[in-house]
Length: 327
Length: 286
Image (cartoon, rainbow over all chains, first blue to last red):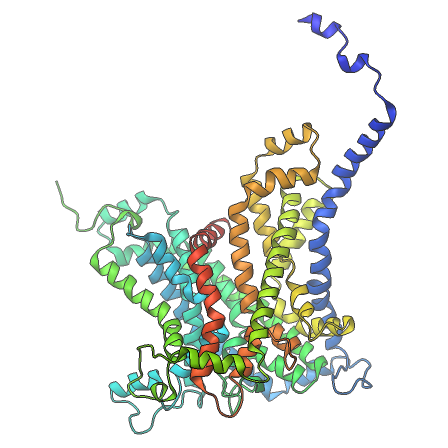
């Protein structure tokens, strides 16, 4: 035992050459002190330049006169762009449309996702293939699927109107889905719902499968049927994921752009229908910035939208916690 | 003794009844119908598109319609597909590389400011990217990149979600002892990354790669802003061109839409299993 300690080790006996050791030491220090920063540097550099800086710089642009068609018009605008916003009818109209479509898409979407998830939450043959199937809409490009829905909701040869005519509605005077607020909102909300139900269902399903099984056994002993089990056990127990999906769909829904753009008869006009009946805020930002060429005003609108998203996401998260939590 | 009215089994242990499979069939029809109908119209004549009741059986005009789409002037459809592939592939490879590097550093290396910097990453997760679009356009203008693929590729090269996802995965998938022992054997950081981390995180790379490719391929707003009116559109921008104008020919538009959707259907068939698993695992962790 002590013998091994008394004997000098091989390393100690041989005098190590000095220079390689120094290089090694330097390399070791470099590798532990500097390399970690080099590994995270690409992310922070690229994200800083193309992600974070634009968002901060947007605040500066919003306070300035900045037009694409008149480079000589510069200087600070103060809060001019923001005060203009308050009296801009187009903005308030777009805000109303955005919220209308948001409500029509989020609530049915999450309820349907819950039902789909509970159907998938069984012992099934070919489990994975059903799950892959519900993801198809999530992968399909919105630009492409919206074009199909545009045909589906077209006035003269649309399948939606054909269904309506089967139940005796609008046979002589078919519904022009794009013409009115309510109908265009329903059409656009249908597209949003179609895209996101499956994705949200998978999120719910994964949370459902972590619920302890004995909870269900106890409920069944108490005589709770599948429907009651879903609302009384499953939903409260997956509540964190529900809150998460509510926040996600708030952030996404209030920035809705692709669907209203492509639903328009002339997508590149960004007008959201002949009378702006389905123009969303994101669409209005695009129109103000790149059709009216007023970047300063578009930047101010972006900041307003950011604030609105923050507030609504917060309120929705609180509401969902209240409704879902057992009192 | 007492027979219960309801099975004493958790839902996930209950075998699906015929009603379950009926429900599933309805859900599948709902999911697939728009894509299927896209194909139907893409293969039809004008008469078939305007027929009542609507036709739901594919026609034989696919090649005719495709030929029109690909030879249409001012839409640059062929170029747009190539551009979309270049853009989405570059973004995917770069995101996988940069995010796995940063995720590795955050999960396994010790350095000053690590936790604070990770908080920055998590905070940036929640910032809606669309809100910086105006300033991004001005930045790209200063770089003179507007109207080129660089403007579309550059902002997509990294993602905060990617770093976060990789950090979570590497923290679980790569044991600390493995990294330590490689260190003791004299392996430098990059060797540890290459020989130990990369092989261990293949499943996560597959998931993040699929998600990134899909997002890059489907992106519309920013490419529209920076590429519109140029000869270098992505396929989504080209589609919006195809659908604009006074007289829209649906069979042609949807033939284009179908072509732009096919790559993603192929991806879903190849990588669907990984994608499902990735989305479901991500949910449990967050």
